[in-house]
Length: 99
Image (tube, rainbow, N blue to C red):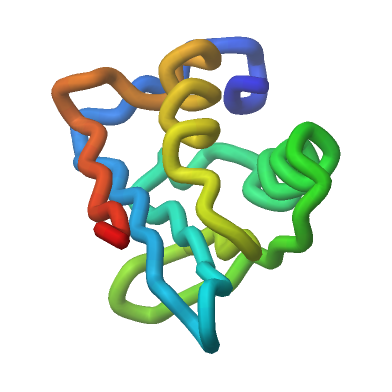
């Protein structure tokens, strides 16, 4: 699941995983700061397939491409990014919801 050409896409920039609470107990998880060479639609489809959730890719002017998923998937996303070498522990920031 790396960029074109099979090279590693480990980025020096921070990757932010945020969980925001919506109505009631519903949450939305966002992922921003991933390598721009990634196929974001493919990553989003992989998330949806693995965890059975809905998601979308937004192109935000200030932040670049952001993946939004329904539900709290912060730990799953962290594990996925580390396994696929899309982020390292040092550049991964989780802004989790404390309930």
